[in-house]
Image (cartoon, rainbow, N blue to C red; front, top):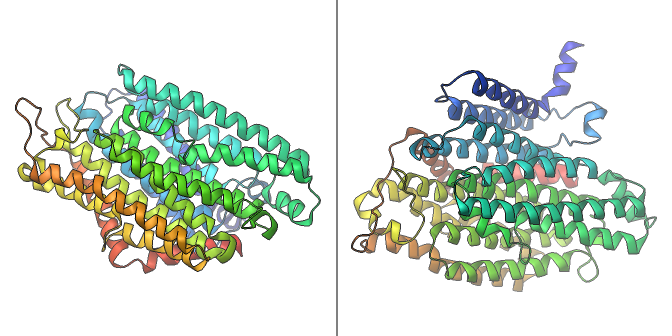
Length: 495
């Protein structure tokens, strides 16, 4: 009997672990002045949650009480995103362990906020009821707003946080209003009930379409799709770099998870996905404008951090390409989305983490001029950045190459060859601003009187870069194991 109870809780054990870790860190921070071990404790807690999720996925024991599964999925898809979110958050915690101490910003509340924001992201990724979607979204968002404003003496941080908060509040209100309309149209808040009602034709069509439009707008804001991306560059630039890293990987992964669940789950019938009258053409349009604008805007940036922010927008467009193919090839398209999110996570950690490493003594390296000549002076510090941006570009043999290959291949299989070609062309535009950083690192010298980047000495940051670099290369050289996990998650979700 006790064994059965424990088995029933395995599926939600990662969530319980993060709650326990967050509360414990709060107590330590309140009663102890020694905060030197908080970064490591946070990272280990997040990595442990990722390991548990991976072990449960391999074991395949997805049983859980009905009281839980009614609101939170215990399935391969949820476990996949648990691993991605916790791994991204854990690597961000390691980056913070070096960054915050180096720049005199170390306070215990940072790690508490990081853990509970990751918890909200996991709830959002597992949500199978509109009520849980909203609760998970707000738990994640409130933590993210606070993290952006963490450096409260910085005007840019405050500006980025206020913009993010105001626009995020509007997006949350739109989601809530859309959810209310969808409940009125179908009589359900659970995604399975909504799908049954919509698929059978019992739902009010006008209300359903209006509700879907509002929900799509809200979720497009969260993934940073154009034209709902306005908050991304300011928030990414204003936040401390470990927070930017966390937002670009864990928060974005959770947003894509719920987008997949809502579109391919609640509106997964053929009529709702129709290439001409369903949500598929909307996703195609979002993908096109997001890929194009994200890459073009990145060309004009003088800040590497801001360039990576617009790059993040462009990558949201690539993920949407895979999602658009769901109409024709179902789980194959979803698995390409999952693999892309995982590959993007480790690639982005490597790129942003290198910026963390390059800044020391209170000076951040965030512009191209800051990085001029750093590759020749400190090659060991520059190599991780090179690997990271090459992966984001999609160069073999990196994780980013196979990520783009799978989403573009999904588009071709779905009969959207033109969309895949457009994706390749916009990626070629991205080559300019990615390679520009490498040129500055190795082929430019700093101007006279300009600050020279001196890498910090932190085993926290070095560990994060080694781990992220390992998986960028490993997923590029032997992608099969990770793709199998993504395929298993997609097949389990779509049946």
